[in-house]
Length: 304
DNA sequence: AAGACGAAAGTGGTTGA
DNA sequence: TCAACAACTTTCGTCTT
Image (cartoon, rainbow, N blue to C red; front, side, top):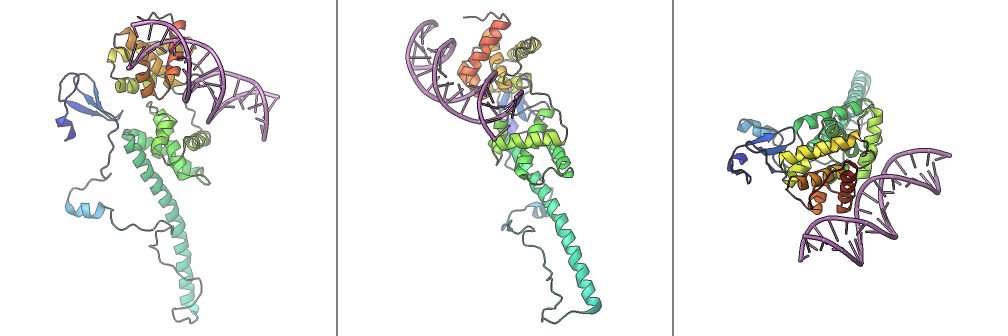
């Protein structure tokens, strides 16, 4: 396994565990996050014997996606004639008509199933690429199914709605990703995802609280390699700031970044504004502005 | 040479008439 | 639908270490 070969750069331990809730590989001894963003490029199925492998592997010549049923269905002609062009009559004609009706029904059913299958495979792909834990993926799938049942998908792109479901699910599970992060693995734009998300949130009555900057501290902190102590400190700073109401309207990522920056200074683990800004995907200027505000309003004395 | 700081102008999204 | 608006970005010059 992958995990055996790794050595923790902080404490030298070779013991790691996979933190499913965050989708990260974490050192058992010191909590260092060893690798972020490993892309899961394996199959999503498992095979226990060659027979199953043969059945489950789906590689091979592509089926055309242009025909809605991938060109695999049989067509029943609408004319009541046989292959010689002779008129079909009587009981046989009724039978043919009945067959035709059933076939039409099945195709409609198939179409719905196929949309769902496509949506879920897309969801799988994105979740794997972002290394999101299973429970997030499942929450997203549940949201998508609900949206289908409420007929919210019709008239919008499946991609957009899947991305929206994933975005919502991340927030619901307390490990928010930004729209930018979702857009990076999605086939649709950030704007479209945002629109779909609002539409879905309204349609399904999801009332999600605005994302708290605190939820970003662990992830950004790990990316920055700051101690657990600093992450805790950053969270405390944020809680105090939230309590004083100086965070409203401000971007949560910028706030989390600034709090981490301050914490790194206070604990002598100095990070540059640039580094912090980078992991939070904001500019130095934003980090600086938030940092100024926090330091001023909370009377924090930072070391020179 | 690199980081921190701040001013000024530009951008995209929300809000309220 | 439009304009005002706040947050954030981009850019750039200056100061500090």
